[in-house]
Amino acid sequence: MKTKKTITDNTVDPDILAYTVGDDPVLDLALARWDAMGTAAHVTMLSEMKLKKPVVTKAEAKKVRQALGAIVKLAEEGKFEIRVDDQDVHMAVERMLTEELGDLGKKIHTGRSRNDQVAVDVRLHMKDEILRAESETLALAGTLFKLGKDSGAIPLVGRTHLQPAMPSTVEMWATGHGEMILDQIENLEAAYRLADANPLGSAAGYGVPLPLDRARTTELLGFSRTIHNCFGASMARGECEAALLSALAQLMAVLSRLAEDMILFSMPEFAYFKLPREYCTGSSIMPQKFNPDVLELVRSKAAQVLGLQTASLSLLHAMPGGYNRDLQDCKWLYMKGLDITRTTLRILAKVAAGLKVDAEKCRAAFTPGVFATDVALRKVAAGTPWRDAYHDVRDNLGQLENEDPDAAVALKRHEGTCLGIDHMVYARRCKQLLKSVNDRHAVLLRKCGSLMK
Ligand code: ARG
Image 1: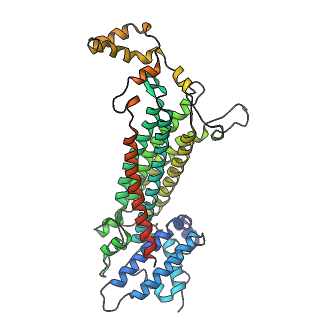
Image 2: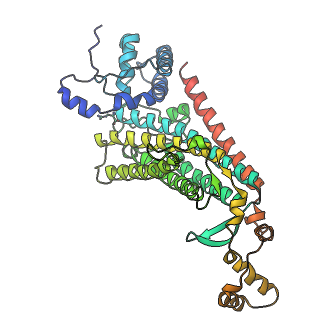
Image 3: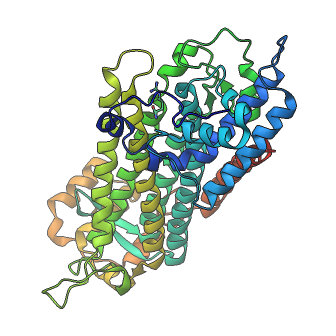
């Protein structure tokens, strides 16, 4: 038996080939294990298909699965190689299986196209990555909750329009950011649910004249549902990527606001916070400088992820139905978005854990105006209607005095205000989310391992 050098035709002009292959030989390395998983499920399903003459027997399917297991091992050791000739991971895996198993390797693509193959790889990869991103999001939120808890009721000037507004606490600031970050998991979960559907068996987007059991691969791969319509399954490529990028862009915008607050409040003019020296970077000319470059880059990365989201939608919006090669370019967009966001989550957790709070600077920043609303509310307590109390204070702003910020903070006790932050609310939510993330991740990895036997 002779194996041709390339699996499809090898008549393509080298420049054209290189342009169309793009960065797939590198990017697709991240898909190797998921490609093997998809192929293991497909070949198992093929071996169970009721045909007069089986495409592959159960014993052959087992051989393929074991060879796929060896390929995954190679990938884990960094020894899996995708050549430009292969074009992508799918054909590299088929080439290796054919080198290893001869004619049997040539059968694995029966009833399948690279279109449904890459779609399934991307979805499995996304499920894995989203769960990892969610646990990093939880870790960052947890760090902020701890910062809040540890700083207790240190008074902080609450601001609106950046102007001094009302008494607040460092705890309310830190946990407020933490809760907003935690909420972002809802968007990631929406992207996860969209990704958690099986496109395999849609082939090139129109199905095949073979009795494929699509529900079977859905079950083997652990997807929650099958994308019913084969044409729809092919069109859904890219949509998942865009949905994920939208969740990532929004998360990054939230992270960027946290970074911005930290930059602002660690300016010497505020000095509420101090970044550890080793987290700051210097200047080549100004010896006194300790700059928060790391946080400035969070802002710029947020802009980049928004750009990636825009790119994904721009790429999709005018594309005709069915597979088009444009879709290949969705791959680096979502992979880059994930990479930037996950790195940012980890770096911010480190910065937040190292942030030092200067309680005295926080207290010293209180000015009489910060107590104005509280003064008006004292008049209300003495029987003055609110609007009259408001005007009384506004007409006599010069008479406002600086008060004790700790005492002011101590009076604010209803749910979610200064002394009304209930850490159990956060602990319960984090525990529940972490369990759900870990459970799903364990199932995904277990399914992947057990399919390769
Ligand atoms: N690398 C390709 C992609 O990501 C695989 C699918 C190629 N399909 C095709 N019909 N040319 O889109």
